[in-house]
Length: 207
Image (cartoon, rainbow, N blue to C red; front, side, top):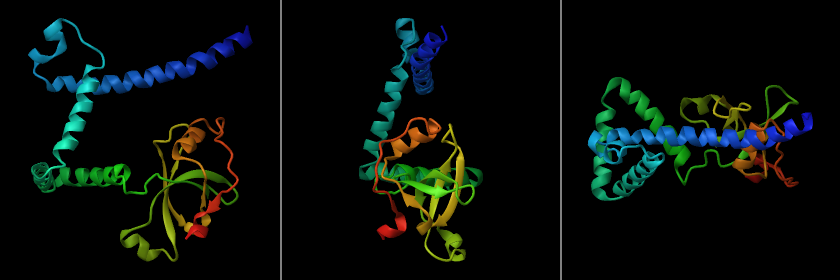
């Protein structure tokens, strides 16, 4: 009975968690229907809600926003509202910080979270997986002697929280695995091992 129970857990737990995450995402995106006038919502038109309709509306809004901002008028509108937001005291600091992070993460030309690294943390002789986020900037780089990189060390099993460190480039090892493989390895607490590659190298050796 114990064996069958564990087998059932191994089958149902991943499925249940997947459905829960999907339900959370779709439920959140369905809130976009609240932007529609009450008379235009599915419940008013056909008498009941349609799950996922708000998700489609959200994706369409994102797509057409991107499409609109690619032309001259759209870029001018974006520049105008950014100029307005940057003049509002509290909003300015929040918007500027979030925009800087999102531009770094989602830019196709950026290097944030493009490489998985191996670093010694929290002490010498202990290793963990980190992600390359860039190089130190501002006044910080004036106080660091040598070639440093910025890394993000996620926690297990929740990689959305973690630690930001600046370490010598030569002390990091570039892993021959994708970011997705590294995240699976972290979330599973090392249970789900990525495919083996023997040609790992130090970032310092590549430059």
